[in-house]
Length: 372
Image (cartoon, rainbow, N blue to C red):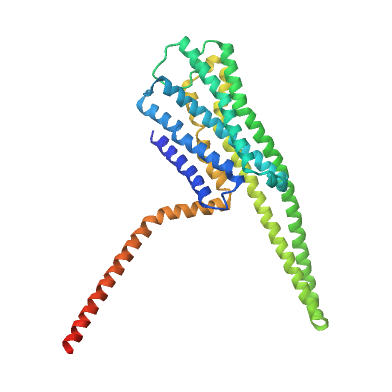
């Protein structure tokens, strides 16, 4: 329960920072970051509603809010988690298009287009889960008495063909298909970045070789250049400086692309670790209904929530602008009380100084009056 509460607070806090950064920083407040903002709202919602509902049921030992609220909670849980997955697919596909043809992608980036894509993301999530939750609720209630627990009761459906259809359809459309899209886009992005990385490395090596050769030649002929034409020596120095600048730029490009590759591996690993255990069980139970284990199923279901925790750190913190804004927001929050206290002290200090000045003036006036 304590771990769940900490997890919920960190999830809400991390995603709230993204939302705050978006609305407080003009550089971040761009059309390309709107899907990231929507993902932050979705993940924060997961930290507020589904995780809190699970903590409530675990702490009390039963579901205290009745049948209808159980259906609503399950709907919000599965639809919001599915929407988070769909957001990841959209963000990564947009990132792939930006790598492939940056100019064309920038021209097509309009607010109306992005809003339509986000509506589609939520619509797909509702289409995948809403029918199955309503259907299985009817089947479970008609086959079994309703108990005082609120959890996914697909396993209680007696019709094995119907059960197999539910499990396989939901796992394939809800996870494995998005996973395939993410892997393909990352695979293509990997080759694009790798190609750019090789080009930058070749240019960096060529620049270094040229600069070293120029330095060697300059060391041998410096005296001759100075005696014949000083302007030639100055021109060579200018050329060397330009080559060094180009070399530094290519090195920065190499580091940037290596960082992008590490980010790709991190995002894909998080997507696999948080979603694969549950969806592998969906397929397993669809093929082998007697293999269902509620405890293992609940653990794997809870593992889907950490994806909402790591998303802010993987996507937003990869941007230097986001990191700077996070630091600024956190430091402002940390030192806010100190600043307010210092202001109060300063006001009190000025008030005391003014009071002392007034006393001094009155005293000096009284003394001058007595002297006169």
